[in-house]
Length: 301
View (cartoon, rainbow, N blue to C red):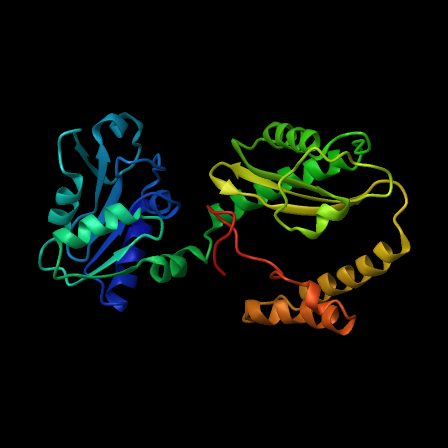
């Protein structure tokens, strides 16, 4: 699979007139090589020249962790890895695409060593590849989604009242791991007035009867992300909540109905947004309807 993806990356490079691709930490690296690097001050980078073999440059102390069919070149503590990467790129390269999560200090160092090259973000190239999932990726995402759906089912029978947001968040962490996830990314629990903050940090607020509680959580299972947001109400919901939720449900159904091959993500968002605007809640809809998911929790489209 790595060879196929690297071949596809080369095709994108040719279309975009890119002489070399340099990908460091982040999800682009395991996408192309199968290896997920530790992010720290020791650079790890895949160097893919347009007309040469790919090379994975890694710190020597990380080399035992590498499991990839890409050729590996290890560097020691007294070596200059940026010089090694620059040599692999080649001084004839005039355009270099660099991964979005490359540290600024690494990019500045490469610019010093390759003064005649023009540097550009690799994101347009890589997102073009990663937006379209292959069959294995679809299966992995379905499995991760089914696992967190199971956690939602368990939450439906969990007593919220009397727990703090922080306590419930930890409980969700445990259930997510129990579901088969290797890592938890986040477990937002936003109760009562905190529900108006989409990325609320769970705190010591005690959840009480009558509270609406936003639960937003996810992690990684077999390398692929999950992300589930659900609304719970402790006891009977107030009328104002029921009315607002009815608008939300109608908007969601409109968006789902608008999903089909060939439509834009923008049109799906508009289908939901129009319902919310018409109901008078438009100025409160401060985020997007959805986002892509894959190796990252948020990725294009």
